[in-house]
Length: 448
Image (tube, helix red, strand yellow):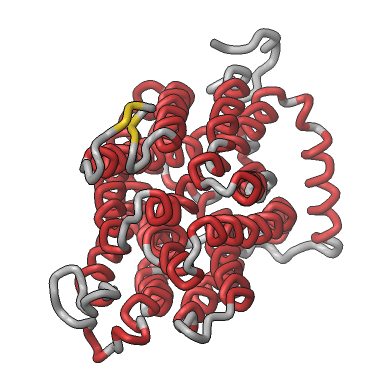
C-alpha cells in the first residue's frame, strides 16, 4: 500500500467523523433540543450536564485504552468497536420526536455516539507519526483537519438544502419539502440528522479501513493488560519529571475545553440570545466551516514553517477575544453601546465571531495534534494520545458544568458562558512552560 493512499485513507476519518461535531453537537441537533424544551436557559444548563457526564467517562477510560493498545496492538480492532458505538448512538437520535421527547434516553444515545467518536479519534491520531517525517507532520495534520471541515460542510449543506424543515413553512432552506417523503409536522427532516450522521460515517470510513494498515501486532504477552496499566501509572507519576509534556497537557486541558464549550453551546446560545432560527444557525455553521477549512489548511503550512507553539498561542488570543465578544453582543447592545431596535449589527457581528471560531478552532486543533506528536514518546504513542484525550476530557465536564451552573444561577445565557474566558487565559498562561521540541536535558528555564 503506497504512503499516499495511507495518508488519504487517514484523512477520510476526519471527513467521516466531522458531522458528529458539525451536525449534532453544534448546528442542528443541539438547537433542536432547545426547541423541544422551549427554554434556552434550561436547555443550555441540561445540555451542559449531559455533555459533561460523557466527557467524564472519556477522561477516565482514554489513557487506559491507549496504554493497553500500545502493549497489545490491534488499533484497528479498537477503531471498529468505537465506530459501531458512533453509528448506533447517532442513528438513535431519530427517535427524539416532538410530543414524545425523552431527554434522558436522548442524552444517553448522544453520549454513546460521542464516546465512540472520541475513542476512535485517539487511535487514529496515534497513527499520525507513521504518515511522514517529523517536519511534515504539521502539514499532514492541517490538511486532515481541512479535509474534515470540508466533509462537515458538505454534510451540513445537504442537511439544510434537502432535509431540515423550517417549522413555520415545512420547507427546507431551498424551498422544497424534505426529501424521501419525510413529514415536516413530525420534524422528520430535522430528526434525520441522526441517521444521516450515522450513514455518512459508515460510508466514508470505507477508504480508511481499505487503505490504512496498522503494523501487524505481535501476540500480546501474558499479563499485557496489567503491564499496560502499570506502565500508564509510571507515565503519569513521571509527568513532573517531563515538565514540557506536563505543561502542555495542562495547557491543552484548559484551552481545548473552552473551545469545546464554544462548539457545544454556540447553536443554543445564538438561538436563545439572538432568537436565531435553525436556518440562521445553519448559515452560521456554513460560514464557520468554510473559514475553518481554509484556515486549517493555511495553519498546517504555518505549523510547518513556525512550529505548533506560536500557532497555538495566536489562536488562543483570537478565541479569547471571541469569548469576550459573544458576552457583550446582544439584540440591544454591542460592546455596551446601545443599538436601534431591529438592528442587523448584532447578527452581523455574531456571524463574524462564527468565522473567527471556525478559523482559530480548526488551526488550534490541528496544531495541538502536531504538538502532541512532538511531546510524546514514539514507543508509547497511543498511550500519549490517550493522555492527550484525558487532558482534553479531564476537564471536559468543567466547561459544560460551569456553563450549566452559571446559567442556572444567573438565569442569563450571556453570563452563563463567561467561564470560557477564564479557561482560555489559563491555557495561554500554561503554554509558556511548553518546549516546542519536547522535553530535553538541561531545560531549566521556561521557553519564550
